[in-house]
Image: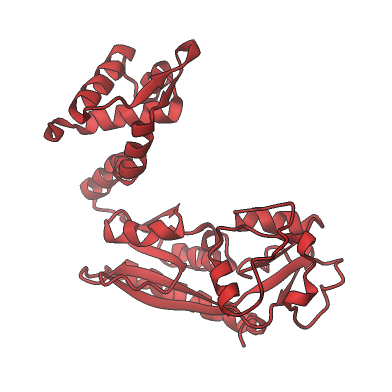
Length: 307
């Protein structure tokens, strides 16, 4: 039965998940409402389970099985949205497209922005498609050929990937510039008041901290738990709390946030992942080379974050 699933059904399904309304899904895809409903019914018949539950005001929400299905096929659904973009590039043969997937800390980092700016200046005929994903999905995106280049903390041990080292840096304690710790040469676990600490229990840096014997996670967690690095940095910049973090965006917050090297040193590796069995184009090699160059320049400028 599964061979009857079509791209049209999946597009209708994705639009309905995102909008929660047959009316808005139809408007998004420029189709009629009966067409959307028919595509969803055909997809449910092929799958053998209901994808949506109906609430009041004709609003639809994914069923439990529908949520599981969406999580499993989300990458495929995203690929469907790229078909027009891919076809246009092949038909015109004028621009090469490079898909780069990275985690939010990398996407907002000083070295990554510098690399993208320089590469686009040097290669105006190459189109970069920059997208974000979780660290746990970066390798899968490259292996599944949904991305040409992945950039993230690592290293990667996936046998299908080549891992090019970009940075090996130490974690820092980010504090408001007015904080008593701002002018210290370095900071230790004893310097950090637990109630001031922004601590995301899911952040990849925590295992590094435990391995380094720093005593975290704290026995008395603070009242604020933040998952996104950029959000944490912005809170710190307003004078609210401190955070142990990767100092990738220190220049962006210069003047409002001080980044104090954390001791004992917690090493954080950043690498660039590509498929091992796939020949990279000249443009892809040039982008990776620019990433390495920009990372080296950043490392030289911020030598305090490497013991």
